[in-house]
Every structure is written in C-alpha cells, then in structure tokens.
Amino acid sequence: MSGPTLIRNGRVITATDDYIADVLMQDGVIHAIGRDMAVGEDVKVIDARGLYVLPGGVDTHVHMENVVGPSITCDTFASGTKAAAFGGTTTVVDFALQTAQDSVLGAIARAQRSAERQVSIDYSLHCIVTRVDKQVLADVRHAMRHEGVTSFKMFMAYPGVMMADDAAIFQMLRQVGADGGMVALHAENGTVIDLLIKEALEAGHTSPRYHALTRPALMEGEATHRGIRLAELAEAPIYFVHVSSNEALKHIVTARDEGIPVFAETCPHYLLFDDSVYDNDSFETAKYVMTPPLRTRDDQKHLWRALRYDDLQVIATDHCPFCMKENHLGYQLQKQRGKDDFSQIPNGAPGIETRLVSLFDIGVMQGQLSLNRFVQLTSTTPAKLFGLFPKKGTIAVGSDADVVIFDPNATQTIHAHELHSHCDYTLLEGRTLRGKVEKVFLRGELIVDGPTWLGREGMGRFVPRGEVRAF
Image (cartoon, rainbow, N blue to C red; front, side, top):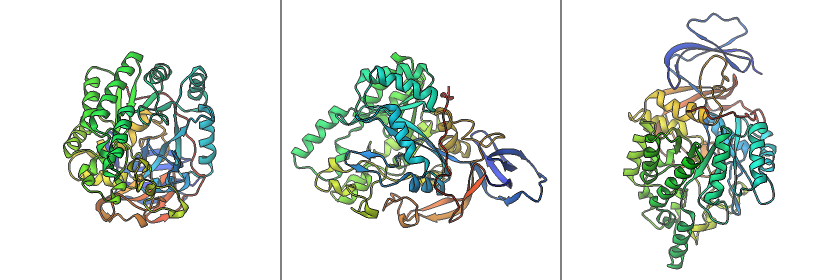
C-alpha cells in the first residue's frame, strides 16, 4: 500500500458531476474531496490544474489468454492488463470458458489461477456457459453466491463450438435473473451464418472480405429479437454484447420502450470504422475480421444516437487480439491461419489501450458525447451493470482510489510499436488523437506516470461482484 496522495486543483468528472477540487487518496480509497485541503508533509501532492480527474475505466469485455478453436489470443493477463492501465482502464472483466472437460466452477478456478499472478490492475470474470443441465445450474448458483461471479455469457453463434440452444439460454436467464445476476448474449443466428459461410467457400470465395458478407446485420437483428423474447418470458434482464447494427438496435430500443430490462454495449471499432474497409481482396483486411463485422455509416449514426439517448449503456472494447504476422513473439495460428480460407481467420481485434482516448477524440471533441456521458459509458454504468459499483466506476469518498489524470489538450499519434499489447498491429495506426492519459492510480498507487510503468504483475486483485445495480 502506497502512502497518501493528494491530487490538487483537478477538474473532477464523474457520470453526474463536473467540478474543480482536491482529491485525497489514502489506504487504497478516496479519503476526502474538498477545496484548498491542508495536508501533512507525509502526503504526496500532484498539481492537476488544467487536467481532468476521471474514475478509472471499467472494461467489461476483454479476452486475455482466451482459446478460440486452435488459436489463443496473443495477450496474456500480464500484457493485457498493462496495456489497459496505460489506456486509463483500471478494472477489466474477462472470461472463464466452461469446456467439455470442466464445470463452471472449474473454469472460474482455472482462469483465476492464471490471472492472479499476472494481473497489474483489478479484474473479475464472466463465465461462458456452453451447456446447461441441473449440475451446471447448481454450479452457476454456487458461483453467484460464493465465488463473486454474477454474470454469464452465452452464444447464439458458432454451432458445435460455443452455441447454446434457446432452451438452454432460457433456463440460464430464468435462474440467473431471479438470483440478481445477468446473462450476456452474443446474438447472431449461428446456423444460418454457418450455411452462408459454407456456400461462399464452395463458390471459391476465400478472402477476408467474405467474413462480413456471410454475417449480415439481419441475422444479428433476428437473434437479438429472439434473445429479448426469451428474456421477457424468463422475466429477467439481458445484456447484449458488441451491438454493431441498427437491425439489432431497433429491437433493443423497442424492448426498452416496453419496459423490458434490456441493456447493451457497442465497441469503439464500430464507431471508428465502417464496412468500406472490406472493399478489397487483400489479406490485410483480416485486421478487421471481428464478430460482428463492421457495418455501414448509417449504422454508425444509429449507434451514436443510441449512446446519447441511453439505448446503449456501455462502450467496451471486446479486446480480442490476434497477430497479423505468424510467430510474432512466438504466437502460432494467428490471423495467417485463414490466409486461404476466411472462415479460419480468428475473429477479433485489439483495442484495450486506445478506448478512452479514441472515444474522447471522436466522441467528446466532436460533440457526440458530453464529458459526463463519456465517463458514464466507459466506467460508471459498466460498474453498475456488473455489480462493481460503487467500489469501482466513480470518484466518491469510500470508493476505490482508481483514478486517471487526463490531459484534454495533448495530442498523440498512435503506433502499434509504442503500445503495450502483444498484438503486432492497431486499427488506429498513424492516427492522431486529441487527449492523453497522463497518470493512472490503482487503489491509490501510481502505476502509470506518463510513459513510465510503475505497476507490477500480481498487484491486481480479483473483485467479487454483487447484484445488478442499473434498474
């Protein structure tokens, strides 16, 4: 535990407040907030005049060391959480995958064993549930009551690998919702998409652009509608991950207008890029092979509107990095795995380190989001939805002293070789962005100081989570 630190004269911005104040961090928490605070000589003082003081980012959708078929994401818990910290994120929620070999509880324990010695920021876990029976439901209830894992991800895509049928999803929704947790759903019609992929390959279409052409927005919309109706029947809340299209969004908006507790996230890449990147047969397009794929500019307009009016509540990264070059840092079966067959390209892209600054640049600076809404989307609401608030997600007396000092006037040009992920590319290569993370504190301890890394592997903690707090 580091000694007390006073951040003086910063502009404190939360989801609801915006004011100039001093913030005293002591014993790992926010100890006091005031003006012209007098402190002893033992207190380190940081002048934040002209800078923003933000709650640490909460990214509730990341994939470290995640196995996808024969591939594994190229960020370890060590590299991924270090990258997150440099980007101003101090808490992540990763995934524990239930496999044929282990139970829900076994999956959680396995992920924790790997994470606990590596993480340099705080973390929690969703559990990916791929099959449901009485024992699984019993284990899920135990995980919620005793392990601090209160959210569970299920897939309507990837038949034979991840996909759960509607009855399994309904059973999970009914029980998890009744127990105060949340089911997060990947919504795409997996069996139809698999047919479209098979037909494309049979026609000789092998380049990465066909990833997008075989995953139409209509099939995201159909699955989203189906998931909402299952949740309505189960009388449970539901959360949709990585919403990319208006086809999905319009069902979410309608359901929320009907009073159904539907929540959803989108990701920075859906706001930064559109489907014009697929207008070629180059393998470089594999950088943009993520699921769902990028959509149209019209879809982007609808996503921004939904973010402003709270039809989307969270911006998470879905950081799921695979290298473009084979054997980069020793990683095998990365994007090149699909050089002759787009369906074999591991789906996913990096983004954990650039989330806050890219959203500040394209959101706040371009008038799409207020500063309060920016904090709400990237920190406060994800913390509330997944049982982390008020420990995480705000600057308030008693909350964890996870604090970011952010310079709104600085600019930076993004280059992959200067980032801290193991991934060998960034979608933002060469792009100049307004805003810069200057300092990051985890529970009051300075872990990022400009370009200097002061954190250490294993200093992060597992955060047990409580019930959903957003409705």
